[in-house]
Image (cartoon, rainbow, N blue to C red):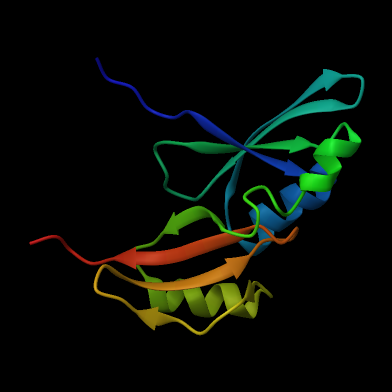
Length: 132
């Protein structure tokens, strides 16, 4: 049996500001933005060139959800964004105002750096090493 993860949800404050950040700053593609009625929208974004999992941007609808915007994992890295051009993409992201919380580092498994998205969720941005 083959399975895969279709979407991962990120709780956001506002649909339009989240779309702006993920598409203009991170360079993701807007895959869908469907009005579901009563102020709810189905918004999917994904990194350019991805063929798998996409991100559902879900506006916080309750106080509890609003309290978790930007801290969905209690301060741990939340998402892992892979690239095949670490240095080039890092420079572009930095120029677009992405907030990096450390300097890039070279680990045994990858070149990696942590950044925070518009709400403070932490992401690992990395280029994995080739497996031998």
